[in-house]
Length: 331
Length: 268
Image (cartoon, rainbow over all chains, first blue to last red; front, side):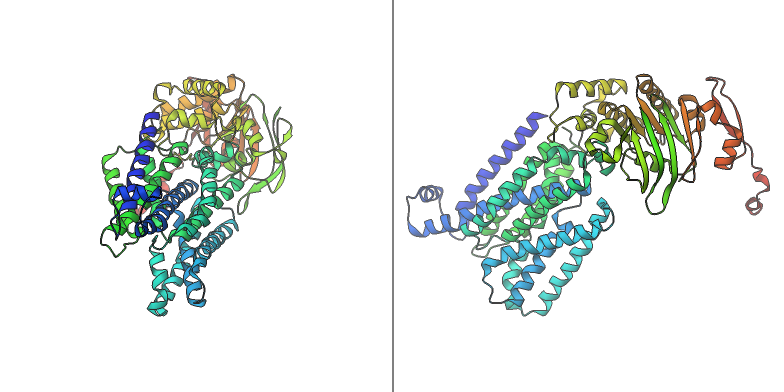
């Protein structure tokens, strides 16, 4: 149904707008709407200006782009592996990024923190590359890819745990916050380093809708319908890897969004990727934005990581959807 | 104008097909029969280029398929795998529409022609009334017909079906077999892996019998299906007689004398 898609898209956009407003006003220092507006349009005093313009606005925008990117990455991975339990985490992206950041922090203590996002991104891409190569050694099947991905992820996770246990707690405290997925301390410079790539990748992703539909039918059918499955799988996996790795580099390990947003989207609008992709993107953006705003306002001045809260919000909402919607929705 | 296999050796870990040379006549309904694991599915996969042969050449309509693009192969040959994946949250109409992919651009834009092909295919399998249902909510027989409609919508001269009647009850088996006949009479070349020799003899115009990765016999059903062949290929002593309804060959294995089997002694 067209109307269902339009209602979902409109509803999600509205929810994002409302949450964005909340996100700008909420936090350790309450700033009323009037002041926010004045600030945005350059009319008001210094402290507010600093908080809204330098902190809350950029990090809210980062939340929106990375949330959308992680969700799209999740949709691709779930379609490729034909597995509803799959997420970007399953091809080792999160674990690879986490290990790279910890290693960099411990081995090169003098490294300026601005480098961490890049290192995280590289770690994620390397892990996914290893997974793909190992799976490719013999013909890639969906199940093999998932198993190799889990194994590589576990190896990296073991490395992370080892480093956390053996290092002294002061050295790892900053990476620890990042590991749980937090937007603390993100500003315009972080936004500037990620948004152009993410927007391009997200547009490319939306153009893949029809091919994702075909790949969802399984390798045999997709090939029988004229798809060059090896090339397409490689391209889609690359797209998903970069979307997730770049996002993880900016906001840390926000694993839950990539798993949850695709499911919520499918519950809302059915299985066609041409509608699942945009709805999942908005859902992911909303989840991360909401989690970040809530994390700041729950018990100020302490911030709760968006990664923790996105799971806290997302999981109950997902269970609610599972219990209240019909078995399956179609388009 | 046919499918021509020239000394094909193909398979996965061990080569299932051993130097197979065969021809599938255009316009035929060809049944591929043979014991489990004899290489029937491997042969179908080789013809549709799902699997590249280790040695040998496959020609479809006088074109070497190894030189064609995947999309060009998909415009000539459609395939129904043995266990098609049922995608979640997709309607019957949409699934059948995917069959149009080889004729569409990368974004799957549906033209008027595409829509007509889908409607026609749905009508042929009598699923028009259920086109807005989710594929996953259909019964086994309906599901199989939906996937068949997808092959029909693909509108290829050659249609390959891997065990299209397995797991269906007798009514749906005959529906699918009759549909295959209809397609053949409409000018398509249909190749199907079948297990029931009587059904193969009744509906096929051409039978290819395989054993251990080799072609054991091929030709018109009346000549191919004999007690000697059944003994040779399946190791079963059987009577072959004319079906009272269709007049075609039916195979009935003899009793093996199980009462003398040593295992039965312990039960009694």
